[in-house]
Amino acid sequence: MRRAFQLWQKIFLLQLLLLVGCATQLAPTYDKNVVDGLNSTSIDAMTLFASMSSGSKAQDFGTRADRYASLIGRLDALALAAGARPLPKNKVTDSINRFLEKRGATALSDDDATPPSTHAIQQIAVTFSKMRDIDQKQGVTAYEVLAFKGQASIYFDQAITYENFLQR
Amino acid sequence: MAFDVDQLMLDMKAAATGVLNTDVSTFRGFSERQVEAIAKQSEFVAVGISTGQITPETKDFFLDSIEDMTLSFVKTLRGLIMVTIEKVWNAVVGVIWKAISSATGLVLPVPVAPAAPAAPADNA
Image 1 (cartoon, rainbow over the protein chains, first blue to last red):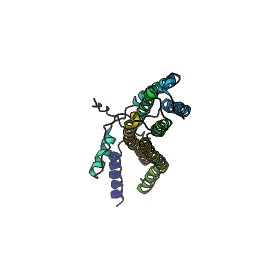
Image 2: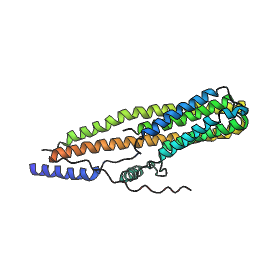
Image 3: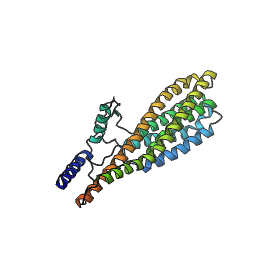
Image 4: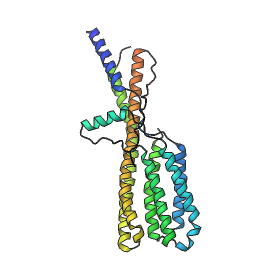
């Protein structure tokens, strides 16, 4: 009886070893430079919005051109830095996908090789590019400034939350 | 040394729960913030277009962006969940390996899976 029990324990251990596999990485590594960059560009972005809270006129666009260029340039650089960490593809991701498919759930597709924060940061840059173009062409209404601000804030929240969460 | 399966199961559950309890509050907070912000942005843009305070030059841009930011929110949530799955998985692996080490009397380092090369992106 005792020998059978010890044999059962060994079989269980062996099955555990086979099932457990190894430790894994399913997300990019944390990068403090990206987090710091996001925090500082977010401050500059909100400062720019505050300075334009009553709208803007195309005639004095020249006084704002450099601020736009600095923000957009830094955001483009941040997007590059955030995207330079590819998501590792390994057996665990495939196993999770097979597990989900067997249970009728949609598998997590591997179509995005870059972190979600990269797209969010790119969209912040796109937002400011559009605002700059409209500002230069015809000025921006106070209402439009608030709409641009709302949009940028949503994307900033996505990027900052994700990047902070990578610290594990 | 005997292998205590019941204790291992308790330790595995504790490791998983420990990670999940902390992370679920982050998901919930993020989801609530995003859903509220996107809903408010949608209303703001709709009102702005109907009152003419959002000009024709920016109308389509804001409307298209609402669609994009919603998808981006879902993908970010998925990304957060993947981080949590990784943490739970590694916490449970660590507990199992420690139990095996104790049972066998050997010090076994937790093995790390070699990452396969990432598939090349096929976007144009």
